Amino acid sequence: MDQAKWQEFEDKCRSCHNCGLRDGATNVVIYRGGKDAPLMIVGEAPGQQEDIKGLPFVGRSGQLLQNLLSAYGFKEEDYHICNIAKCRPPENRRPTPEEIKACKPLLAMQFTLVRPKVILLCGSTAYEGFFGTKPSMHEVRGKMIEKNGYYIMTTYHPAYALRNPKNKIPIYEDMGVVRNKLTEIGAMPPLEPIDK
Ligand code: URA
Image 1: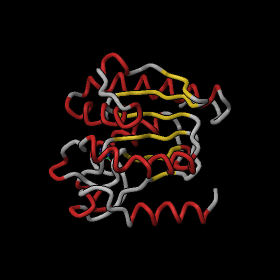
Image 2: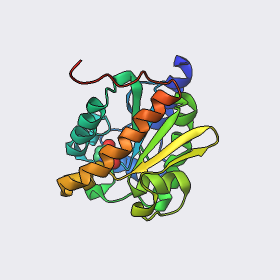
Image 3: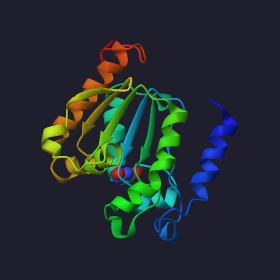
Image 4: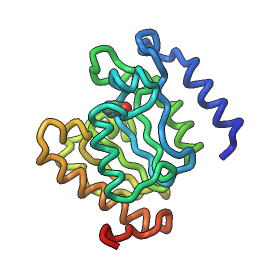
């Protein structure tokens, strides 16, 4: 990891005013996890807790995501968690297409620095930010796509599972596919049995 390039990237994020969201945000939320992790997890935008702490996925959705990562033996250096928008939209509304577009050069830069092997898109905004079209989540989720040498999986946003615990099942399954792919390509060791 090139520390100077990384610092330049973080400075760019913190001084960005490409859209109006920065004015209402306390912090620019850039990432948590490893800087050169094999898995990049992309969510929508910071919520209240994330805005206060300056870290992504540290509220209730984050707790659920963290449980899932622990269940599959991920350590902090194995994942890089970020969002399509780095500043909190007012009242937690979805970022607009213009805001997504404004934030995209920063996400592209982040992607180039991290160079993940597998990308997990959580929810329809993450999908839209990546592919440019609004998905039907029931159709796109759970399918591992290979694009330009990267593997991309789309799953539901963890907030979807907070609405109904049954919705945890597909997210858990999709994370399992991601975990297996990371092992298959040699980016992570096989998952050890729990009762070893
Ligand atoms: N939801 C998101 O999409 N991202 C966060 O960082 C927190 C909640």
